[in-house]
Length: 423
Image 1 (cartoon, helix red, strand yellow):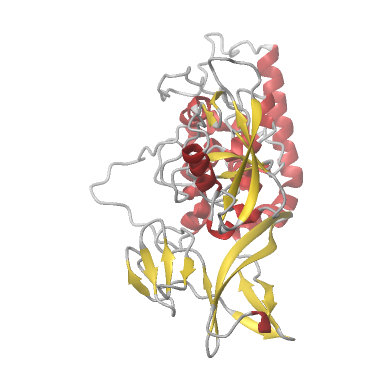
Image 2: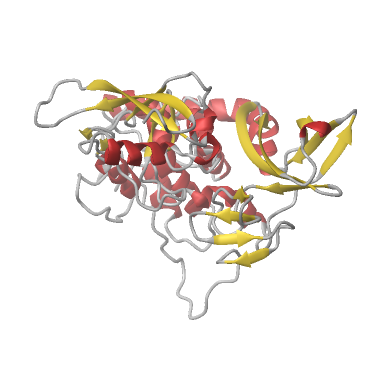
């Protein structure tokens, strides 16, 4: 192993054997990584399993940031192992890998996602048409309704948001960020016929949210579940939501059944007797509604409004002009913050800089499924290892499934620095 080239990295990985029980332990591993910018945490786990410890258990499927199977906590932050590169962490820093929080551990890094999908189903995540149609509905991409849900439809149900959520630990009945985000996309769909039933299921959970933005910060798809939750509250207020008896959540393993959400009045007209628990629940929702009215203007102007609008572009320094060799392609990781309302999210974006007679700056995201593209000097091509896509030096599609050339980024040179426009 000492003859291998590259950095020697240390990994501390959580181990749990269900046959032995207990609280588990962390095992330390060392591995030579030849190219940290092209080696993901999933690559590391696969190598460790093959080369050092075949008993190491973890879950993965697509390897291209699409299925959400490899969600785990990496150095204290939730993320997808297939999307997180070793180079994201300082060269001498040990990398700690453990399973998602708030889920029962099956073995090592594998968790039981049953509770997650139980809450998901309880929020009625399926589309139920309001009226029968013989032809597909036409939805303009620039329509207000479609733009409102925007990125929220890209959720892959990886569970990272739930793992990061403090409230998921203290409230077992809390639906969680991802299920509420899914409910939001359907509540905003005017074609769906389950608005009232779905709102009955999710509204109480929306007031359990404490607006910590943890889910927004860790989402690998850059979705703001916090925005979705607050938008559901706004929908309830705009609809002047009345006091309704919530639909009972289905028991584990049972299918959610749609029934009437309105409590039947008593025969004497006085209505059902209100228990202390129901009174306190109604009082809490009433206070939450009043608070929403009081601070609605602040939220609209400082959070929901800016989240719906395009954020102003940023010019990020990629390096000194003379640091990019003539005739070569360089990979640069840009570190900057993105602001959404009053929330700041740190981002790391790799870009590809080609310098021949002039500079050309490419996004490193493949135009097929967003996988990371790298430069192969031997083949003189940009390659996407996931699907076999290849792009020529000018970014044009050479082979494979990508539908269009690599996206070019706007740049400028200021005082000898190359600045790249990030939107």
